[in-house]
Length: 227
Image (cartoon, rainbow, N blue to C red):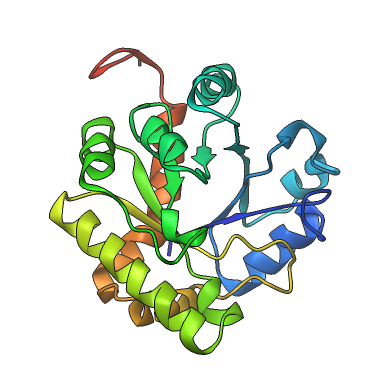
């Protein structure tokens, strides 16, 4: 299956890109997208590129203190990396990311605060600009008791909002180590616990690969491709 996972590699994670790639290949992934804040500093990326049987894509995680800086960073990184992910810790950054068609994935707001859910305005902006909503499922493993229950409730609200506005979704655990990587079937099972239907979960795990393919094509205008 053409499943892709988004990860952090050394020095922002604890495992090298090649170690992550070897583990992901063994688990059954087709590809791995490295989303570091400073992708140019990923350790020995060429070693991961030489591993056969798995695609290793260098993307970027965009962070900023305010929306103006965020827009500038996205513009600067779009031409260099085929996958851009935004982790917006404030409502301003979340809204700004959804208003930019150059963003591939916005990490779901409840990753930062289980009491928060996606607003209608944010969902409409994401729909208009075709920004996928990312669901980090690691809290299902890391949290316990009432904290996990609150996270599940918030994730469920965001999933319902995504369905209402027909938004694309992506599931991930944002592994920082090869030991944190989950097999696709385990990640799909976690997604179902979070409220995803089986078909939705499979599509969400395949979507990063499809976005990579689209972004690597040469577009000279809206809907016009250079062949």
